[in-house]
Length: 246
Ligand SMILES: NC(=O)c1ccc[n+]([C@@H]2O[C@H](COP(=O)([O-])OP(=O)(O)OC[C@H]3O[C@@H](n4cnc5c(N)ncnc54)[C@H](O)[C@@H]3O)[C@@H](O)[C@H]2O)c1
Image (cartoon, rainbow, N blue to C red):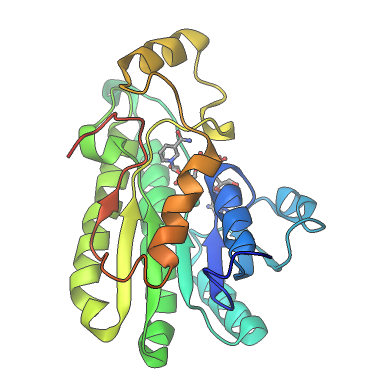
């Protein structure tokens, strides 16, 4: 560790086994944080154990009891939670007219309700400790929408609205709540999209290329840090190759 930006901060990161969550875990570790890494995929979570120090917590974040147990476990093992990063998520592509209710509900459960569940479990402890940071990973599609992605776009817009509302509720008591809305990022989540779709999407982007997970992670470090993140709350930061300009 040679960067003290997050020295001693106890950080719970969901979706930490893959993609953007894994890159945030690496960046936080390099910045001196103590990590609690949560994900559905126990095998992948364990695979990084040699390189990345921290506790591992395998669970389905859509299960409210499991989220409560996760919070108690992390508090017992780390003594507190200073930073919560909500990065777990799924992506499926279905035109609206073909979408069944189960597909819609699964998306809302995983990409939006998990954020509610983790925040509901963790916020009381942050308030009790006098402060904390929450970083919710949304998507630029929650800002601009995407064809075939009504469920995903709605869930991610929900994350952005939730972030603003919670920021208004708890910021004065020291808990700063922000969102990151990345553009297309090369991770397993978008592996299955066709090369044609990817080429067309890249051509739309002002930067002309997708991002890498390690190009998103520094935004999370900024939001978690003191003094860099001190004036951000209720904001949505956009490492998105220019796909959305606000
Ligand atoms: N990749 C992109 O282009 C992109 C763009 C914008 C936003 N995002 C968002 O970034 C976040 C991370 O995505 P990624 O691209 O790294 O994807 P990824 O598939 O590489 O990682 C997502 C992780 O979430 C975990 N997860 C899924 N459902 C879970 C559940 N019910 N309980 C616990 N863990 C669960 C998965 O096991 C996986 O490890 C997601 O919220 C995604 O919507 C991704």
